[in-house]
Image (cartoon, rainbow, N blue to C red):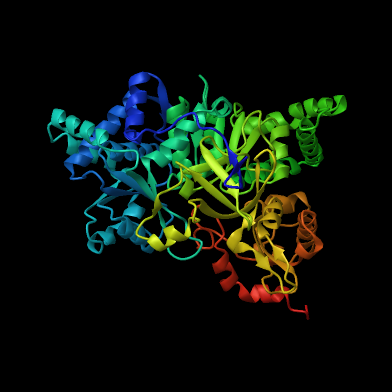
Length: 614
């Protein structure tokens, strides 16, 4: 369809957010409707049993927290920083602040003192809640340097009980009337949170999201008949392990509360497999790197055996072929069906048990998943519905769904959202989910929108006749070679990163004669891979120069090059001995490569690629 001569992907949204609706009211209403329904399960320690929490129990604690915040002087419109990994208390604090008419400002627990200082100062936080003593030590000095920052609370040192205790010192009836007044006076267009983008360049920008923005996506997803099949049902369960400082995780937690699914929190990804097996989610939302890791771990485990290695590879191909055949008019052949059934007994069932045994659906966002992985998981019985969104769009803007999926695309528009592609290939977005602007940054806000009100995502893509979008790269990351060829690095990077021993890839070649790549090695996967190949254990430095390792990477590069033209293909690569991580500041907290920093700090390694004498 067209809007002002522009092709638009649009799916009708079943829900329109009203002026007087807000996120606190959402929980209040749901608690009245289903007080004894289990909304979350939580546990106190690694290996402990999951303990059910009903809507009424959760909301009672939220109200107690709100009374505490009010007693501590938190006023409507105030902001409180939350610096903690994903955990049950995060959800409590989020709603406790909304009930008090305030809002939580997330800070990644990996952030430095300087980064935390910027967020707390720019957002104007009145208090901050951190998880641990270590984070307290990071933030505590800022109480003396940031005007208006008055209090610091530590979750591991009883912050929740301390805040609740403060509320017990004031009249409960009066406090409850205050809470109800604040909820009633919070409009859909009031700010619900300010989320600071990871900042691949410069200081992070504060994205101002309203209650309307977030409610629009939280309510329209479960109200959509197709998406409802994923997130709802008597047995629906989801385990949240993404950082709640990211909008994607906040969205997941709220969708679970809205859709009647039981929500669990997994604070440490080191325990993720154990948590998956004990919690047994029916659906999860994750970033592509999680699915890459799951596949690579299964591959490495199988290849530890001379017998199981070939079996895994064979039936991985069967899964991909089976998934692709589903999309053809004739469907899978009888022979392929028989092979697939055998693969389920030998390979796929083991993979599903690794993920808890009940996982049926997954939604992937935060970056391109890749067609091969998408087909593998669907063929193995776990369909991954790839989607797309940004902090500025309150998470989802497009998504594949049951009965309406094209593997390799990010799907059509999410319910209630409009998506288009500009003349230059940039993906443009409109709808009630689009943010109202960057905090204290009018210039950046103005630059983010077209003259007719479309939000510029900065991502490049294409749209087919059915409204399905395919991402082709980042607008600012387009490489122009010396020969004038425009190259989108994401296609090559995503394919190459799928190799078991590859951690990160940065494609280079701006104003150079050909395309090259910097590759880092996955230190977790490398030892097992070396052992499976009959190679002696070796350091990353040694592996980066080992002929057999380099030959394997060369084959992986050639496979990645099959997706592009000769002029766009990687001709030469350099294996780095330093991986890109959040700790060394080459990755953002949401695991995006800080390309500008890599290009600057590894300039000599890039020059090595183009040294004609080598």
